[in-house]
Image 1 (tube, rainbow, N blue to C red):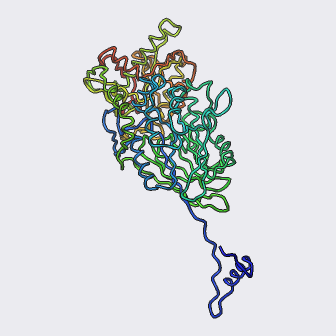
Image 2 (cartoon, rainbow, N blue to C red):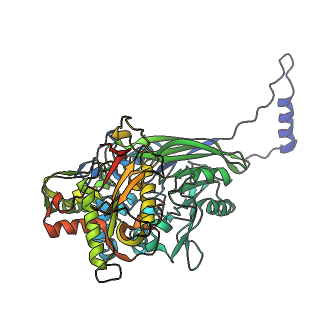
Image 3 (tube, rainbow, N blue to C red):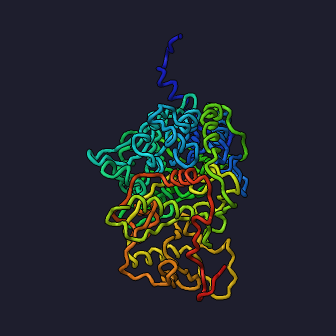
Length: 596
């Protein structure tokens, strides 16, 4: 290069700048200098939650392709197609994929590899690890159902994942330190030549696990408040270089809990956004709701936090889009929004299907095994508001199991009651062959059987609490079965009891509805000090649903899965006949007049 001669380079540049600034003779004055805006970049975050063991778009209880009245589809294979579609659309741009938990429980496929051929014994890769690794998540948060099968199986599954599993508020009881990875800071390229963006991702799991899976976690883990945990870790993540902070949380946004005040809030995501500064967006799950886009203002900073929840089972995919600027060496989000994609708009991803095909086929073969022959068709369609044989089947098996176990003990002389909830409105035992899938469709949860001693007063209080499930209908008012229940109370939190006779008067206020409670067949009223044994599932006995009088020391707990007990009873008998177990013992009334 030829060096400048004469005036210095600096003088030349200064002179040129002065000349440019001086107005030209005979022309209008130059426009004032307008600073150019910083260049903008974009980031997309995709979110799933509550996939609950769904890989194929398949209903194992019906042994058919999944379908519902809204024609939703399910499964990680569907989600993978949506994710692939967006990644292709955004090739060369930044796209992250997160999951907010409840992954390894919920279908016969998931149960098979936890119970029939557990991955802890076989070394087999869990189907949800196979599927999610192909989808290539950036992180997953642990949901409460991840703990259903114990810590060894959970640990095995986590080690099979190709990405981190997060749960900042699950703390090792002995050391006081996080039992799992609390967060990660991911370096993200926003495109050729762009500075690196550091995305902090904090995972929060549900404190209710301390109740719902007490048998697996008590003395090993404690679950701290999700709001307080976010307040602890978000500043740490910012100090360690996170330019933006996302939270993946397994808890709803409503601020309510299904249990009492003894544990931190079950659904605190709106509270986290409101109370903890420094959060840009929250992907959340647990409530199985579809929340496309919600903004919550932080009370300290005024910044609006974006929240989204993608329904359940792989039916929806959250898409969060962020526009960012780099200003004075710092990243700033200028816009953010969320949209929702429906998995029924795409085919299943063939790679995911291929990876899980053998496990899917083995599960289908298993659930189609015949366990017994039913004398007549038994349906759960009316079990919420009528005493039905199919729920009495559950109660019969539970009663027989507990009665046999207590023989020869100090409790052998006490009457045995049993509770069952209408988990499914569609379960059916067909006349003729009854298969494992039929039983699994009736009892869809992996609960185990326990028993405790209760008084007559506690039985009445329990039934009164359960009866809040029903709306109030005055005498003579039309009752539509489709509208009979309070939508705030899920079906699984309404229990029926066997072993006592009782009326529920739905014309009376909540808390005053059990108008008759007697010993079976005798008409003798149950006295407050009468003593009973009650067969109950571990979820309820541990406090799930916050029912009164049931959280106490078990007199029976052999860790037997109720679904398997139902299968074993049917196989041993070879037949399912309502004459062996149906005892109508409760009814809905209004001023003593039966509703149905």
